[in-house]
Image (cartoon, rainbow, N blue to C red):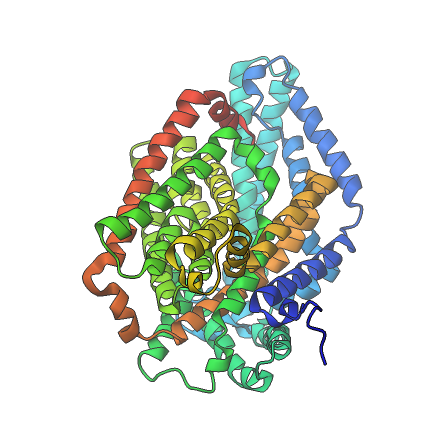
Length: 588
């Protein structure tokens, strides 16, 4: 007989949330071992030498402070040598990175997304060879002119404004010519490649990871193994469609294609029953979100400072509460879980927040699908329309970046939209969004608490909800995978602080995170494919009926746009203008 007083810890390996933590942590740990254990040759020596060179070159302008942002040829050479030291470029890392290579860009034949055969390579290289040779000549001529102009400015210790301007322009032209030569060299030096074998290996690896979890949780691993190749194939198709030249130009991301492909199958021929055991939507996406924590670093808050914290942590909860109030009191939505899922989606950080909110409120999968679908649709529109509008009105880059970061849902879309405006806007937007992402865990906890204490009080008939019992019920509802997300964020923040900026940049940002980020994309593709395969429009129509869900998203997003702009302007231009000046002065 089992001891009734003995605590049962089987939930640690029987729960999907905990398995997402174990798998995500396992992948992150293995990646850390790969990169930390195999650093690039003479990494620290190169960093020491290049940093000394860059510092010396900057100090040469002590007598001409108005040119402190001017970078000499020597500075750029040291900067480029510094940047080439990346963990992903080592021989050991390439063994793993090559298995995760993205599909190729293609135009007419989707097979071109996987294969670069000898005939294609020869034709491509021959067509671009002359352009490459001409670009080499142009680069060398630009370098010679830049060296001459810089020498003239240096002869008077960079105190002549006209000579400094001429040198800066010549160096800028040389950089452009060097970039053009690099692009032409890549176009004229293709090699044969075949992604089919790589993706077959990847399919087995990912299937083994999730199949192990399926087996330990007591589900049929055989049924999962039969259906998984189909789900993986469809996820691969989403990457192929996103890589098509026209689709790529329109910004149609793989997540949209994954959802679309799954929906088409589910609502036409129907998802085959043997595939459904591999449609593990939450398992895939929770594991990916645990890994996402490695990119959300606590020390990134310091880049923006108090304005960024007030803008994200102050405005976001207000928008969330307003959106929920709008849905309940004004639109009178029947489903509170749909209301909170959409509210979290458009107020916090899009898909990731929607999933966490759906888990905390135990929303139906159809409700999550609807929230995600609206998020992807409106994000695609705002990603293009918002930066074009801000460029047209010539908005200040910091203001534009803060507005984009606090209103566009997806982190990737935020970076892309900021990039269209410029590097300053891009950096501000990305950091604002990352600071906003940090509160996903707190948001999920608060929603879980509110749901079990106010919305779903069915347990009151079973137990008296004392304070201790209330906390226990909140914990039961809390999405445990968020703990993995927070844990990864803390661990990687400590690693960055311990290793230092240079080493962490080479081995973490351009090593571990690059590798795990590619796997994370696959997990998200599998998840969105699964969402589509398990969604029937006839069931979804119930939630779209009357247009309340769309009205909620639009109303909440409008409030978010207005409030974020108002608060951002006050913070960055009235209360903390020196932060704005510092952000604009940062070298990029």
